[in-house]
Structures are given as structure tokens and as C-alpha cells.
Length: 335
Image (cartoon, rainbow, N blue to C red; front, side, top):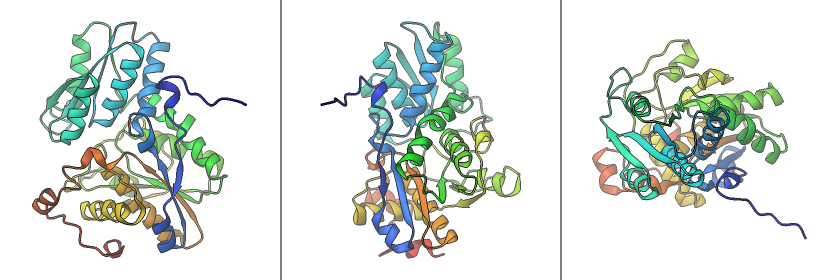
């Protein structure tokens, strides 16, 4: 008898299931698959990037024993980095915008991170969490700034693990893949790998309001309008990781569609997912309708709904935002 034992946190990351979303597959006539990244040990797709960035930093001598990992993040990368730090004997300092969900802020502190909250200001403002994190790393001795937006170990983690898993688990029977982008790591690594396996795979971005990437992919110009309740995705600049992406097109998805989809999947499939994952699934249905029945579409279920329970699944908060879900089926995607 052979054993199947994974050693520690590092070997527990990845090899997540590829789930057929039955309700949406039946509704579209396509095979819609979700990569269940919420089943990573840190609860999100960001565990992969966090692990790769730290291992690469160790390899290059950018962090030494008893050092400090510093990062600016909307939360999930910080959670992954804090767990990696704990497992490998480092301290963690996480800088994040104050408008992120309280669940993620509380969890980071529970895990042992030193959390610094910054105003939710644009990237050009020196108080933006990205710039504050870089400054904190410069101030500390033996500190490694993960810099997930520009650190190519991020996209490489998905090129080496996430995408090959999707390819293997589907038996190579993938017609399309769609996902949102924050740092660009997941979409960069996954689309680059899958296009190498089969250039005919349709690769698409799904972008929330307030992000300039939809405009960038479709027109070549970064142009953002509005804002969104989604966390950790949507950006108005091209990162080094996003430049690795091989894309055929882009869709836009609204906050109402995100909320409706999250509640639809919870009710009909027992899938309890967060805002980025819900937007990704909106994109999967859009791509399925575009390609037509009989195709297989994959997307990323980035994290679980528990990190957004006080917002996305809170009736008072939803009513305040005028986002109360009212759909009986998928009619919210018909506009």
C-alpha cells in the first residue's frame, strides 16, 4: 500500500478539484467547470502565488532566516503569505485598504500578521497600500517585499501548477477559459500555458466596473469608469504579470450580476463563493453562450463566501447598496 501524505503547508497547496457546475452546465448546454481554489489550505487561489514568491525569494537570497515578509494586498495574498511565513519561520507585515471586508482583516490578525490599514486611495496617491507596503519593507532590516503585482513568480505559480492541473483534470478537453484579473498572476500564467497546449482555446477576461482592463484588452487604452464591490480584482494599469496573458477578448460584469450569481450558486449548487469567483462564473456563462452548446469552459473559484459574509450575504448591507438579489433563475444575465 502506498501512502498519500503531504508534508506541511507547502505540499498542501494546489491539486484542487475541478468541479462541474451542474446548474449552469444544464442551463447553457456547455460543460462549465470551476477550479475549486477555495479548498487551498489558506482558503484561496493566492496560496499558490504566496508560496512561489517566498520560495523564489529564499532561492535568490532576498530573505534570510527570521526575516519579515511585507506585502500590500486586498487580503487573500496576505493570508497566504502569513501562513507561509508561519510555516517557514518569518514575521509578516500586511498593508491593506481599510475598505476590505472585516472578515479578512480579522483573519489576518488571528493568523499572526501585523496589519496596517491605509485609506482606499488611487494608485497615484502615496498613501495607496502598494506604496506603503514598499516603504515598510525598505524601513525594516531583512525584509522581503513580495510585490505580487510585478513579481513574476506570481504568474509562474499558475503556469507551473494551476494551468497544468486544469489541462490534466479535463483531459485536455477545454474550449475556453475566463477569469478576472487583479495582479494579473492567475490570468497571466493560466492563459499562457493553455494557449501553448492548444492555441484554439478561447481565453477571456471578465472585468468589474472601475477597472480599466476591459478597455485595455478591447481597445488598447486603459480607461476605467464607475466602481465595484468586488475585492482584489480590477485595476487601471498593466502589470508585469498581466503582460504574460494571452487573451482573445474581454467581458464586463456588474455588481448586481456578481451578487445574483453568488446567491444562485449557493442555492442551486451548494457552492459558497466570494465576489471574484462569482464574477468569474458570470464570465463563464457569457463565454458559454458565445461559443454555443457542447463546449467546455473553465474558470477559477478564487475563494469562499465566508470572507464576505457580512457584505455579500448580509440582507441589510445588500439593501443599502441596492443589490438585493431578486432573480429566480439566470435572467439577470440576459441584459
